[in-house]
Image 1 (cartoon, rainbow, N blue to C red):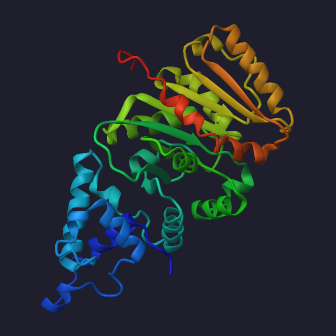
Image 2: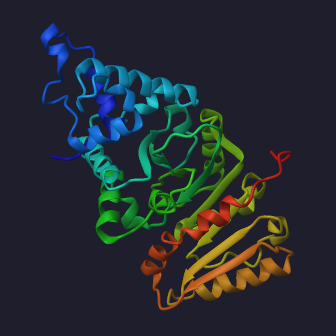
Image 3: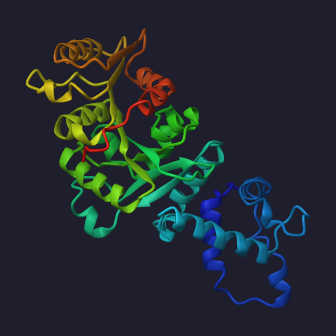
Length: 337
């Protein structure tokens, strides 16, 4: 049986709470409601006071109390209560895939984020769903945001979101939540999803919504990264909206265009990476680094993974936990908007 993630578990209880039950039924959860040992351990770790009688179990009343506290804690942090519920509830495979992902994670929790219809119409080719990753340990105060843009071509885009996640796990393609898990840092990671080439205008619209909807995000500490087509998209985005970011990591792409105005990126810290055997990409990125330095950027660095082809280079990027430490060392001036 799939180990359901606590967030999905609490969402299920939201529906169960409306079902009539007898007094006897209210004392102990049914087998369908009862958390697995792993779920129980995680719930008690976060809410140790839930087990009032200290018997190592949770009654239906205790579960309901935990659920209410969980939702209130999210609202206090500016997180809409609706975000605690699984999106596209009819897609059981997607819910199971997400639960399986979270069962393998220790430091972070991955949630589905569903763009409102009115917003989604403005997001071009971006899909309705995205992934938002947060630290398991809930922290007070504002947290930095790292936006990761995935790569892929037509064959990849033709798969459903759930299929993409399954394929990525099978062949080792990494996303932002993988890096967040390894880094174990206090930050939020957003993995949006697109069905075609990324568009910088759509990404700006998305970021406007995210920063307005989630006030727990520190607007002075927003970072962007991407690999392959995602690296090229990150590069185009910072060229259009450099003042929105505290640092950037465009990786595994061709290195941009000679027409790019690099002077407007002179103050933006940039870390590029590429596999040494990734065709023309490493040479293109090395050339880009030199042009950035010539434009006055003193916070540009480059890492080349010797012998790595395109896929191996991507795995290496998302295993470079130092990237997160490096990014978090930069912050936009408070006067910048």
